[in-house]
Image (cartoon, rainbow, N blue to C red; front, side, top):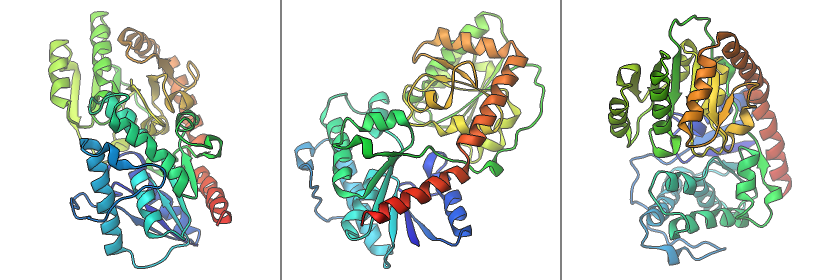
Length: 376
């Protein structure tokens, strides 16, 4: 089978699907499949000029809103770049973003296209203060799910909770497949260590949706209670300076290290004790599985795919969204009891190895590809 993996972000983009797909490609190549990767380079801007028409709704009623206009121009650019670069035909195209899926189906209408929706872009934009809930941008973005259902040959997402969310915007939500993200275990090497002071780590883009402000408040509470710690924050983003000021104001700047962007945080994580990320929304939360494979104790919020990865009290701890006191309580529990912390970390590692292995993903993808090809 000759396949194309159509990404939105380039494969070298850190985190999430973009960094996962090359490992999937290598596994399929080892099995004798032909598989290529394709994405839109960041430098391609405002090149496409073709008219955009969707079959299930008229996007022009939402024109003039910045997010909508950006999406439409990016769609045009994706079509332009695809016409420039792809000269061959494929047996199947697996797209990993609504724009990529719709562009590929427009250009290759006779080729089966499978779309994986990895996250809720409208939710992230709302939480990050970029668009208003119930506004035209959110309506446009959610209507794209219906357009995908109308156009492509199959839709997959990464968690049961996100499947339920998507079901509110399509006609046949039950037909959406679920394949959680998978990870090459060879990338993760747990390291035996004994830190005198508990080492907390979080890895994420520094945006409001990730709840790092709540984490800083929780750490301030821990310091007031007299518990020593070091908080390592890996990642960058538009609110980094705001978070650094907040750390100063909360009197925890000396305990907090802002590293900025790091290409391979999984090489760094095994030396710490507790992974914590109080996200306000997560379709899956790949970094939790990565931290589990590094054998860290997990503390997260009871949202989306995170609550499907963590069974509270068994392989990690879950807390409500935006409740820094509850987060401080959970962190205190794992910080002050090394045996309990190891028990949680060990359970998280075992679940991640069995549930989120790359081999498991490959097998599920093969089944999904066969299903989509059978619908031609």
